Image (cartoon, rainbow, N blue to C red):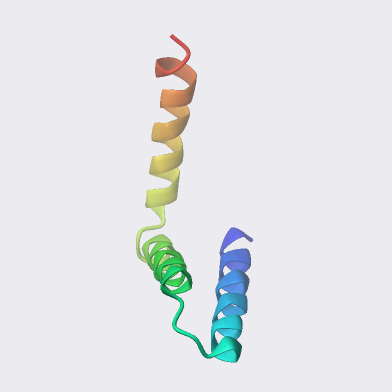
Length: 65
Protein backbone atom coordinates (compact mmCIF):
# COMPACT_ATOMS: atom_id res chain seq x y z
CA UNK A 1 0.00 0.00 0.00
CA UNK A 2 2.77 2.43 0.94
CA UNK A 3 4.72 1.56 -2.21
CA UNK A 4 1.63 2.24 -4.37
CA UNK A 5 1.28 5.68 -2.77
CA UNK A 6 5.00 6.43 -3.29
CA UNK A 7 4.83 5.35 -6.93
CA UNK A 8 1.70 7.47 -7.45
CA UNK A 9 3.36 10.51 -5.90
CA UNK A 10 6.45 9.99 -8.05
CA UNK A 11 4.32 9.79 -11.21
CA UNK A 12 2.47 12.97 -10.19
CA UNK A 13 5.80 14.76 -9.68
CA UNK A 14 7.12 13.43 -12.99
CA UNK A 15 3.96 14.68 -14.74
CA UNK A 16 4.28 18.14 -13.20
CA UNK A 17 7.96 18.27 -14.15
CA UNK A 18 7.19 17.38 -17.78
CA UNK A 19 4.34 19.91 -18.01
CA UNK A 20 6.30 22.79 -16.52
CA UNK A 21 9.36 22.17 -18.74
CA UNK A 22 11.74 23.73 -16.21
CA UNK A 23 14.78 22.30 -14.49
CA UNK A 24 13.76 22.13 -10.86
CA UNK A 25 16.70 20.92 -8.81
CA UNK A 26 14.61 20.39 -5.66
CA UNK A 27 12.03 18.32 -7.53
CA UNK A 28 14.82 16.32 -9.18
CA UNK A 29 16.39 15.64 -5.79
CA UNK A 30 13.06 14.55 -4.30
CA UNK A 31 12.47 12.22 -7.26
CA UNK A 32 15.92 10.66 -6.89
CA UNK A 33 15.39 10.11 -3.16
CA UNK A 34 11.97 8.49 -3.70
CA UNK A 35 13.38 6.31 -6.50
CA UNK A 36 16.29 5.14 -4.33
CA UNK A 37 13.91 4.34 -1.44
CA UNK A 38 11.63 2.31 -3.74
CA UNK A 39 14.56 0.40 -5.25
CA UNK A 40 16.01 -0.27 -1.78
CA UNK A 41 12.64 -1.57 -0.56
CA UNK A 42 12.37 -3.85 -3.61
CA UNK A 43 15.88 -5.31 -3.35
CA UNK A 44 16.11 -5.32 0.47
CA UNK A 45 12.63 -6.07 1.88
CA UNK A 46 14.04 -6.43 5.40
CA UNK A 47 15.51 -2.91 5.40
CA UNK A 48 12.32 -0.95 6.33
CA UNK A 49 11.56 -3.45 9.09
CA UNK A 50 15.09 -3.18 10.45
CA UNK A 51 14.95 0.63 10.43
CA UNK A 52 11.49 0.55 12.03
CA UNK A 53 12.82 -1.81 14.73
CA UNK A 54 15.86 0.38 15.42
CA UNK A 55 13.91 3.64 15.61
CA UNK A 56 11.17 1.97 17.67
CA UNK A 57 13.77 0.68 20.12
CA UNK A 58 15.33 4.15 20.37
CA UNK A 59 11.95 5.83 20.81
CA UNK A 60 10.81 3.41 23.52
CA UNK A 61 14.00 2.75 25.48
CA UNK A 62 16.72 5.32 24.81
CA UNK A 63 15.06 8.70 24.24
CA UNK A 64 12.57 8.79 27.18
CA UNK A 65 15.32 8.30 29.80
